[in-house]
Image 1 (cartoon, rainbow, N blue to C red):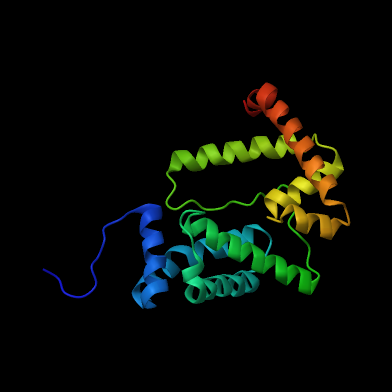
Image 2: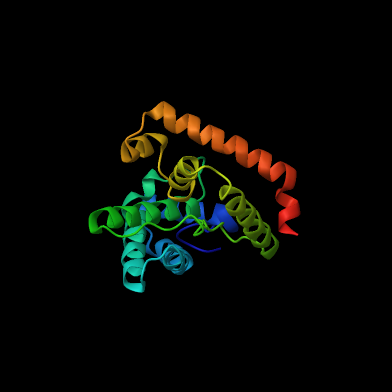
Length: 197
């Protein structure tokens, strides 16, 4: 029988959520190190795919992991996975840096690739194919709708943030995004699969 902390054998997302809980409740350094080893390389790679250079990717990754250490108690496994939560933190930090430094935002075809907690190879292939279909379908949207979908789903801004950033009424933002979804649904439902072959 082992003494000290009880180890719960969980895998995947449940394991990661338990590690965050251990950081939140006991500032468990071993749990944090495991989270860091798992997520830091993925965050840095994700940020570089979005166009950040290596130094910026490293800085934002460090910020995101520090946020996990300090704010682990705010993580809610009912709302998202640890991976989704951390990638959202990293994305928001990167957006803050871009706003402060006047950098260039990622283009539409640089789809945000939120990492799943231990996705299988089949899931990754399906996700890539789906992303490609969506990117192709987006090229058929009017420019005003395309830019709003980009901000909402690839940059992660809320409808209110988009309205403020674009100087548009909130209702206009919502209706344009709703129209865009209708077009995307029709496009992907009728000939999206044929285009992929």
